Image 1 (cartoon, rainbow, N blue to C red):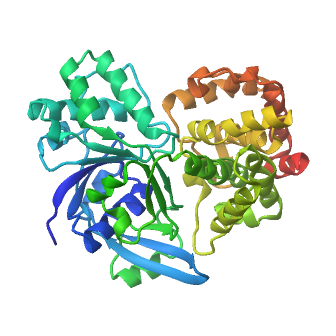
Image 2 (image 1 turned 90 degrees about the vertical axis):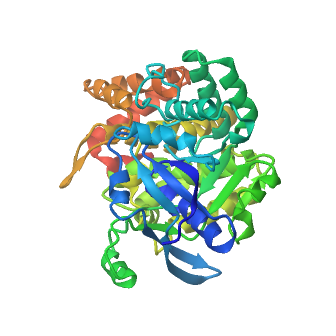
Image 3 (image 1 turned 45 degrees about the horizontal axis):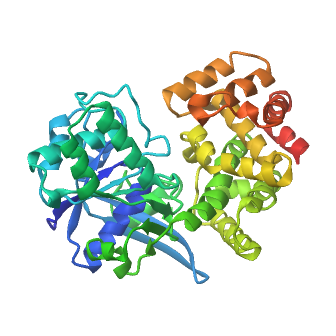
Length: 468
């Protein structure tokens, strides 16, 4: 196996980064002189670095879709990861990554909930619980080890789906520097020697192909338990000078990577018209007995809901020319119906509340401001999320919501009431989720409570028929 220089620290071992960023690095290694390997750091306790390590950090990406009307079904070996590190078990190994002089890039995807300041974190924790806290520990050790050498700064590329994710991460880092009372020299080194660039990522990644794994095993020649499936479409917008491509030549090997002055127009379009519908169709579809995004879009009832949210609500909240909005929405619907991809809705419902906050809540506010009424589909989608977080069963499946412990506790508290309107008020008034009291939005609590009551009384499909 070719030995490459470890240049990249990657926070996150999930399907998306492995089918997106590591695929990009592999392409750069094979088609340019980038010659870099990635060290994957597990950002949460109980992660999956061990499973990746068990396969010598090698796995395959299966990309499927249509290109120019022609079907594509490729399998590529991803060989750019050198090792995985679990900082909860190997803190010394983790912090020693800062001592490697060739390390240059830090990449992350820790979900929307990952970039957050947690004041309970201590600088002496091994490691700090939050991702930004872990990052400050690593940066400070590098600063100390190299005596503040300005040439040893990092280029940091967050991939979390948050607008201006680079600025958000930078703010968290500065908060930790102040909170932990770290020296001014370190603050200056961070501000002057490290660069954090906001980015936007786009590729639908369903994950391990539950169906078709046997056929893919035959094609590969052995069982790849870390195999990950994705669509062929990909886009990475990086708000950085074009000169960054001299160090990170992703745009020089046929990849859809753009270095731009502002990622804002790309971000709003994508988050609103792709991720926004994703977030609400998933619980509605799942509780309607459907399992994949494609099934949701093609189901006569749930498909009407998806189109309502897409074309009648979210599309109206953008400021782009109408035909551009419609064309992008049409393209997204085509991607949702990709016959080669089984994107399971349960994989989308991780951290649904922070996702709804960043992807759909802005649309609710803008729609209310412009139309004078609440968007019925989006509010119903939030009711479906609340219903999903109630837990219980769907047929033989046990429903186990996966979110921050504080969010789970709050929803458990909300559902301790049998009054749907009380549930709605408890959820909307939770400033720890939203950063504000959403009961202040005219009619929001009443409409949400009404939708939850419909779902409780009639079940998802009949309730959906009622609002449609």
